[in-house]
Every structure is written in structure tokens, then in C-alpha cells.
Length: 175
Image (cartoon, rainbow, N blue to C red; front, side, top):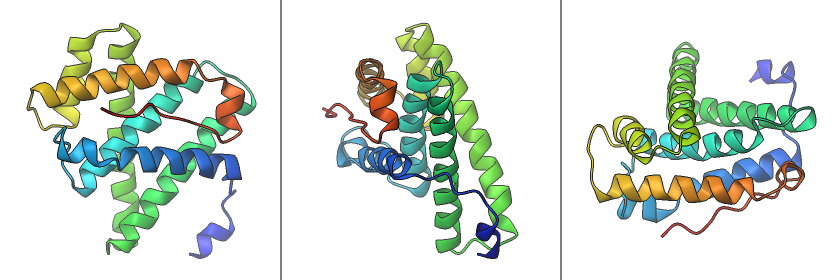
């Protein structure tokens, strides 16, 4: 697209590596087959959003280059969503509206997730997941995803910001 020529491309190799790791982790079959995340475009967007939220939680107190890194990953995320919408046949006039809606969903999820996780409130996190990922259902699959998010959050805190911004992000194996 011609407008891409005028956009600042902040996707360094490290940004692409981290975003690619997030997407790969979000595609783990366990989420969809065992934990009942809907295997739909929306479900896949939700799983990428959850993993992006974990990255942003880890880097939110950082300044300087780490803050810029977070923004670059975010920008790549939404460029990828734009590309995906276009591949699915959404027209040029519909893409910005859908991207705006996706952004609102993402920021709402991020705020609710941060609030629950900052308080270490498992019940609140399960409510967030039930409402945002599972269309109101509850059960062991919601608990399993909440446990997973708390474990991933702890694992990411143990990683240095420098390691992450150099393109190395590792998620714990989902069980």
C-alpha cells in the first residue's frame, strides 16, 4: 500500500523476533483444544492480545529504549492485524473501523488484566477471562488459563528488559 511508504517502520529484528514468539506461543494447540479458547479469528486475536499484555506488563515500568520497544511491538501487532483483515477481504473503508474496534478491545482487556493481576486477584482474573475470552462461560478451562497467565507473568518478571528488547522472550510451556 502506498501509505506504507510514509510510515516510520520501527520493526527491528528484535521487535519482529519478540512479536513472532508471541504469535507462536498464542497458537499453541493446548489453548484451543484443551482450554476451549474459541479457534476463531477472534479467539486467536484474544490469545495474541493476552500475550502482548504480558509483554507490556513486563516492560511498563521501563523507560527510554524499552518504552520505545513496547511501542514498536504494538505498532507491528496492529500492522499485522491490518494485513490480516485485508487478506480476509475487508475493504479499505472497513479496515480502519475494525482496527479501531480491535484497539479498544485490546486496551480494555489490558486494563482489566492489569487491574486483576496487580492485585494478584485470581477470581477477578478469571472473571476478566470469562467475559473477554470465553463469552461468559466458566470452568476448569478458565482457571487453567488464569494459572497460565500468572505463571507467565512471573517468568517474564525474571527476565531482564535488556534480554527482551534484544529479541529474546521465552514463555513457559503451557500445561
